Image (cartoon, rainbow, N blue to C red; front, side, top):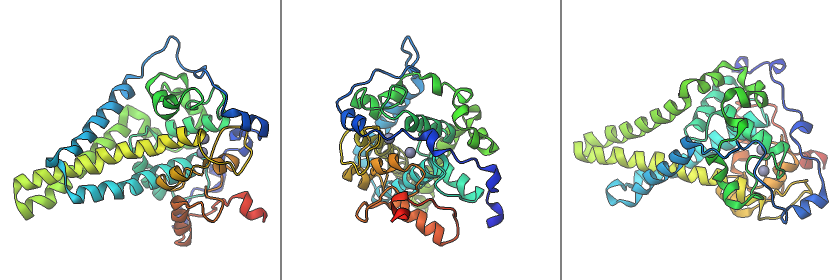
Length: 332
Ligand SMILES: [Zn+2]
Ligand SMILES: [Zn+2]
């Protein structure tokens, strides 16, 4: 298995300094009272990013089908809940964020790619685009170039920023400069080509529908099979996608406004207990801004971090290595 591990010389971990906002206690204390204009990179005059401005409300509408009794099943609900962990925690928290963006540990390529596919199935753009966005966020946290600071306004930080064109994210040619380490891997380049990542999401919709059909039809007949397939699609894909979005978005918005601070970072990042719990660990966001490569975001014993527990389990199983611990742990 270790033969699959990418040789260390092929990985170029981002320099901490490059993605770290310098500590500035005074600025941190004042940050909550500042307001920011839109990023300079927002295209002028304003251009709506139609793919998102239509796609995001559309998936919300499809998720609302869950309110129609025809689409309800307890197995669908179970798939939605399990999907929050499988796609949100493993795909986004563990892979897109802690592995690909911050390189907090090393995974064999087959595992890294499989986890990245789970991330793609949350419809949060390609790994390279997500990583670029997040690296810019860390480099300029709560300053004007930050793509999604809630100091512009809360809704902007939550999801408004996705609806407008930003020069940094027009296409891979623009954001590749932030993600050269990732895009050297042809797998990530392939996801960028021809909307391949969107086809993967559509394929996951088909898989959920067909799985429900395949289970329900032999047991209860064609009509009930069709109903179960549609239920799994609505709950297992649409509801789960929307909830995963709001969990991720709440890390960008809520944890840069409300919560407590363990560290005087130069930004407005906070540890928010509610977000920490519902995001499976990403809400200990002030800890994360203070020590970005650390694979654990909960630094105190009670800052519960399911994503970190998962990384520890993978480490014990020998599936990942070189796991970066928080400096606060290793110092003391
Ligand atoms: Zn942040
Ligand atoms: Zn981060």
